[in-house]
Length: 118
Image (cartoon, rainbow, N blue to C red; front, side, top):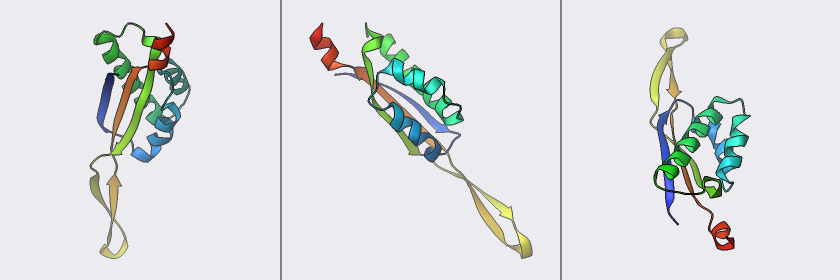
């Protein structure tokens, strides 16, 4: 079972905001996952949708005949390096601001059960 992967590294959204959507599509058919993400208004869901489309495109490019048989085997969102800034506060103190980034990884593979039925 060959996996087709797509990555978006250093995405400008924190990993915590995207993880619920990654959990939502994990294990589903790729077309169903795209349909679910299409109607979610969050920016993180749009980024995840783009990565999923790229993974499906990679599978098509590598010679998968039936795109409708693809299943999302891995949808992972990892933390990336942070931009660290300083916000000046009262009496000469400073608070640290952490601008969080994330790495989005999506893998799709052909459904083995569906192939055996054909």
